[in-house]
Length: 68
Image 1: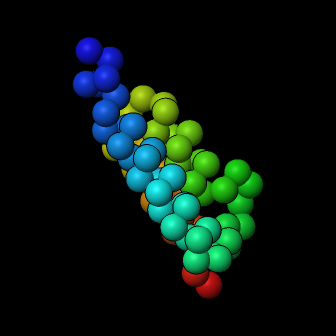
Image 2: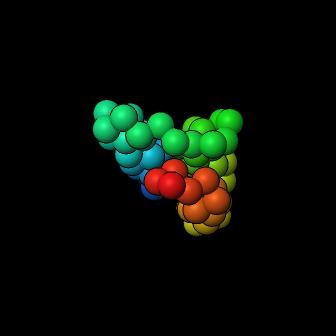
């Protein structure tokens, strides 16, 4: 039963890690924060509240401006 409850967070965490690996492969390492935005997002998705974690993660990436 726990898997059915956790699958959105697990899928989002996997997606964050996939995107992070993709950008590393392209040589883009522009995160100005520590922990990095992907680590921060993965941690947010481990906490309760899927939509809150989405909002927190998006806000962090928008503040970081990794492409500038």
